[in-house]
Amino acid sequence: MRGGLPFASGKQPSPAPVSVFKKVLLADIANSIPVGAMVFEKSLNILLLGSGGREHALLQACLASPLTAAVAVAPGNGGMETEAPCHPLNLEDIPATVALAQKLAANFVIVGPEVPLALGVADALRAAGIPVYGPGRDGAQLEASKNHTKAFLARHNIPTACGARFTDTAAAHAYLATRPLPIVIKADGLAAGKGVVIAKTADEARQAVGDMLDKRVFGASGAEILIEDFMDGEEASIMLMVCGRRYVMLPPSQDHKRVGDGDTGPNTGGMGAYAPADVVTPEVRQRVVEEIIEPTLNGLADEGVDYRGTLYIGIMVTAEGPKVVEFNVRFGDPECQVLLPLLETDPVQLMLDCATGALEPASVRLKTGACVIITLAAAGYPNTVRKGDTITLPETLPSGTQILHSGTVRRAGQLLTNGGRVLGAVARGATLAEAVKAAYALADKIHFAGIHYRRDIAARQLLRK
Image 1: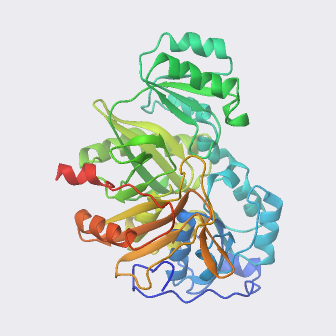
Image 2: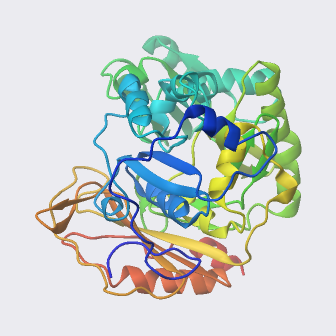
Image 3: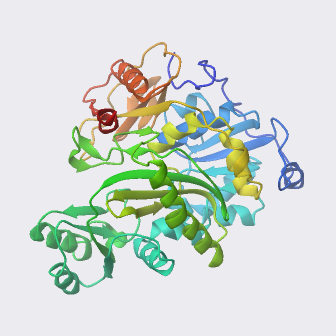
């Protein structure tokens, strides 16, 4: 059969109702989710915003949750539309998003991507009386502006690289002359994961500054830049599910950004990931909690930010200890796809508890074992991507595996490529080696013209064993 499979049963989930959501009064919704209490089973009419692999993983979690009465997606993709009703929507149109949620009588909205959060979709939905998993515009500034984040880190004495902000090319060039190489140049705003250049030479650094400030290759996102010292170490992703000062820390994970084996070639949105990541040792984890997580959440609360949603902390494990590389204000993609399967506690319950102020971190349970995703990319990715190639999927999937859609579309009954990162082959196993083996066995059964994927996902950790 085609599409993804839930990890719990290995069976295809029943399709969500194709009709619009049942009408539910907001007063009844409020009564069904009191702070500190569980909601009744089958009580949630969920609207999920997004169209990528992260959102397909979230949809799978919604379909498996006993809390879900119905779920719809906007805008969705070619895999998601076989499992839930998908509605066309411009996620940057906040009034249209609120109107769709109201039309569908949604009593819970889960926001997948960062752009609508930065535009204030969570604020608008909450103003309409609809609980939301995702921070408001004030919290979303942690991802929307790198210079905002840099100032926040400095105010709260949170370890990160030395850096400075610039809007003037000459001033930026003068600063570059005083700093060691390699050096990192970042567009201040959102740039779909592409606004970061690690310059190994002075010429590369100057070109990156000119591209951003003068040529505006990232548009308004690069009108202001951040220049940071390069941090030597190994990266890891720390994902928190946050409700104010309370949080659940999911297993540390590691993404693979470069397109080629051995971390070669240009950066991408992520060619694969695995969890747990052993680079975050118990000692490193404790320092992350004490030096990064707690100061961050206390700082947000003290500054009046009521943060409810995922906080992604990209860290570099350096010789001096863990330091912040970046904040994101949503689940990472592809990290989300390997973290949700490791939750024993219902992810939908956790997201709802964060949204409604009911989170009880001590009650959350994780599964043992490991999970891996292999990103299957289209011809040309991460540069000019070819679209429209026919995709062939295996008829059956082994237990513990899952295919998640990202850049796919259905036309005339055919599944076609429609983006750079097309599919994710996911597997969970008792050990990381077992999960890797199963994920690659699944990836090798998927076919479309121009398909390419890395063959060394999680190799760094396996070599440490």
